[in-house]
Image (cartoon, rainbow, N blue to C red; front, top):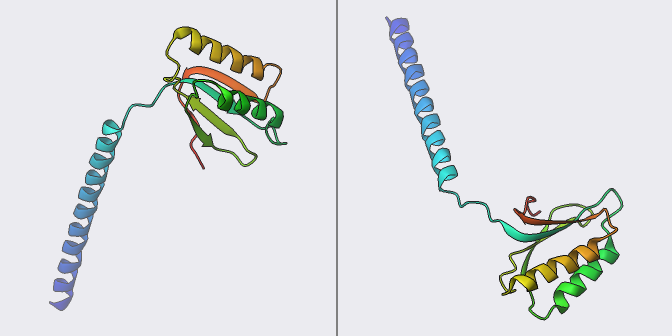
Length: 135
């Protein structure tokens, strides 16, 4: 009799615990899907300048010239800095909302491209997302 009672209580306990795990998994899945759908859409930046490394650090002279140009620009365009690597890899993401005319934007981008010319460790892209996550 004691064995039968013990066996019945063990089976009912196992059934209850399995059911609660299934409900917990369903709740977690619903929460995750709601968080994914309510997340903000990714931000598209007008200009992204990435300094990459191929095992020996980034191109310091190009970075210095680039930052001198940006910091010395008359309209002071704001940017987001994302440091993502171990050797100084960094993305500079610009909205360029401070530049009011289309000519100013084109001039700024063309000057940045001139600075980047000849370097395979400085990438310039337009109308894209900042792909890297910060450290």
